[in-house]
Image (cartoon, rainbow, N blue to C red; front, side, top):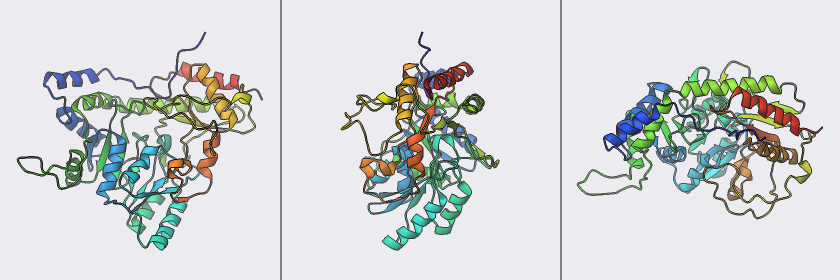
Length: 416
């Protein structure tokens, strides 16, 4: 009998969301403004620390886009961005006609390598005669980056940091909430994140004046006239009062969700410790890192053989593996020039047959065809991890019994 379907990170409602949603309907506040939007922004502000301001937006991608605009990014500029990430970290750079400069990862946190970051800054200044406009580190799967080093480089060269904390709500570095170190911080509230607003995001900004300017661009950049006057290009990026109502309910269980993810990570650590060839990624043990473990990740030794491995990559994928809507183009071939090892793909297929959603790590952006002409500063870390890495379920709906079943399935899949 097939075990129930276990998803990577399924949305979990607190039971309080309906109250805020009903209030929005009862008062006819169903537009991208209203009491829930204001309240949700205040909830996040209190969560991250009262010295910052927050703008609730339609997506984390929108938050990155507006942060880049606030950093005065224009066509012809360059922006330094982590390569090992989801495409939303870098697509907004292209929206603005600028060029992403991809920075590889270091092996401890899997995030932006500070040494490569500084090398890139020096070489881009020498090559172009001007500094890159921003630095975008990412908290991959919730793991804090080497923030001391990155922020020191930011100060040294006077380049603002936009923290992509889309996966990092509730993660901390030296006790401070991730998303509050740089000039701007980005959160995502997509359906599979630590908390959800169905779809949505937020931008953490330094001051009330910064918030006012971001809101101007997020609401179509309308000037103060008795008719619609536009002197700048704006965007329809504000969060709806309905979605913000979901967010208000979710904020009541934000720390509960974070603690649950950490508990699931600890359980994987215990159950996988003696499984030969399977290595769970854990935060550095220096005491500075406090990951939310949005997803739990493992690497698989190349010599570990999985059931069905001989059939991996023999059939073309016809639908999206992961993703919100699953709308994809048909693949042009079965293989690409950078893909997970056959044993990783075989395990993904095996786990799917067992009712478990698993996924490869993010494919590095510098290996994406759409970015093949962009400069990249590489050390091989992200490509190597992508070939051997694997994401395991960790969401608030994942139970202890689920984790035991997942680990049992991994053991069953291994043939040698």
